[in-house]
Structures are given as C-alpha cells and as structure tokens.
Length: 263
Image (cartoon, rainbow, N blue to C red):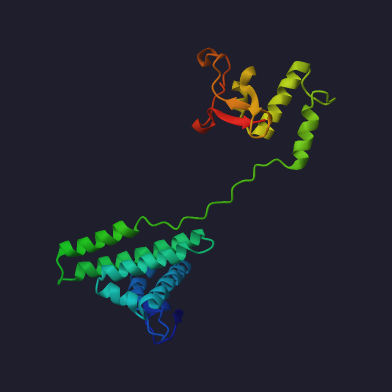
C-alpha cells in the first residue's frame, strides 16, 4: 500500500508517497527508485506509477512470500524475477476486459525491474560483466516484447434490418412505381442481382462475372427431385483484358471459385 510521509521530522526531499508492505515497512527498491526518479515526474504521475508497482509487489508476495520481489532484485535472481514477471503479466492479460491502463501498468512494472537490475549490476563487483549482461539480456528478450493487447472489438453485425430489406424489395421490384430504373430489362437485371446477393451471399464482382449458363440443374436422387445451383467461377466467354469497365469484376477469394450455391 501507499502512505504519505509529511511529518515535520522527515527531510523535505524524502516527503511524499512511499510504498510499504502489509507491516508498514517501506518496499526497499521501490523507495530507492522513487527517490531517484520522483524529481523528474509530476506528483500525479509519480503516485500513479507507485500504484502500479504496488500491484506488482503484492502479486510477488502472493506468489512467493512477503518481500520476494525485493529479495529477487537484490540477489539478481533472474529465474525468480522471470517467474514473477511472467505470472504478473498473465494475471493482467487474463482479466475479463483489458484497458490501456493495463498496458501502462505492465510497462511501468517491467521498466522498474529492469532499472533496478541495471543499477545493481553496475555496482556488483562479485559478478563478471558477462554474467550480468547475460541476465539482463535474458530478461529483456523474454519480456520486453510482452504486450497487454486489448480485446478484439465485437464483430460488426452486417445483417440488414428487416425494415431495410422490405424497403429494398419495394424499391427494386420490377413492377414497382418507385423503381428508379426506366428500362424494364435493367429493372429485371438489377432485381436478379439483388436477389443473388441477398439470398446467395454473392459479392458484387461475383454477380458481374456470371454468364447466363451459370445456373445449372440436375436430378437429385437422394431427394428425388430436380435441384438447381449456381457455379461461381471466372467467365469463360469474356477476356478480362478487353473488359472496358474501369473496375473489373473478379473472384475475391480462392474459396469462392467453383463454389456451388444452391438455389
């Protein structure tokens, strides 16, 4: 938790928010980090980051016992630090709903761990530089690319409301008085295209490719009756290179080619 040091006996440069454990003892490395960085942060930003670090410390306490994070940092125990960071990341990522604040929380906690490890490594004469660099590199490679991704937004519902479908039927009916197309042939062509796209799920380019003989029929022995279908394929009667239209029709996906649509 966070307490405010504002007693008159406390030096001015040490006053402010302090992260403490459940017994009220300051979190050692969080206090060092806070003292070193507080001057460069606005008070609100400093307090917000301490709240994120408090969450990391509490998670480490629950995972490995009180003071586990400070102990792992002091001993440069990369294995324990890795376990704490990974477990903390998973706990954030598995929330029912993640927010940009969760991403910031993870980045603040990870940056704190890396900063403290770097400070200790530079002043630790008992370890070779190669060993220290290996520990730093391992943590960096494993965890620096972790991202708390936002949940995918719900897929947009593309189904037309019943009122819209009804209005389109009334508008595009070849015998409708409000049909905007003057020629009867054009009215029927548009109406057929509308029916194919609405009920067969054809895309615009697929409809524009259909030759007259795309509609097939045959006897279905299983059902004991004639069935009809449409073959979705490239038009064998036209050369796409000679198509004068600016936006040439085509099959969008390979899965659509030779895909029969039952009428």
